[in-house]
Image (tube, rainbow, N blue to C red; front, side):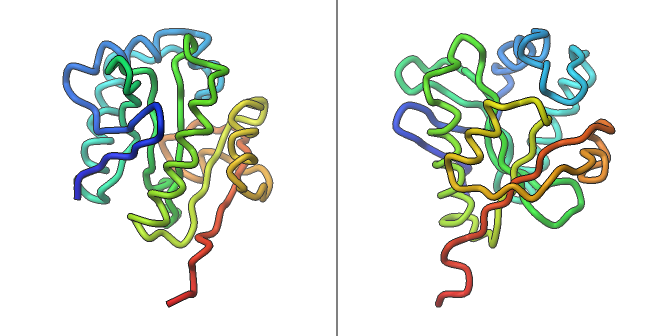
Length: 180
């Protein structure tokens, strides 16, 4: 199965070697990482480990957090996709749009497309999303696509690689679950 999620203006695809500079630009910008974990700038080993983990996740599960590409220009403008949430047995969807493209509705557009992919292609029973508590923009996206707030949780308790911070936890059940 080829991993490709399309929305009207964007698509998500696996990371390519030539995308590393775009990814590094995101994680070297303080404004971009302020709600990502504890907000620190990433070093090269962390970048490489993340990209390698996404390749492994894709090979094992048929999905990953991939590159968000603007259809109009072919430019990589973010990261988004679906991945297992640590060892919890559930899959999470996530998104991260480069700041020059904020306030255009891209995250919401992608979230709807990821939801449809999770349920229609991957046949997941549910999808979850997490965000740092103060990240109101991501929380609004979760709410717009119908996700249900279930409280806050320790990020470290969800995945060992996550920092020890509190995150909001949202869930969306597959509407076709239980139907033949």
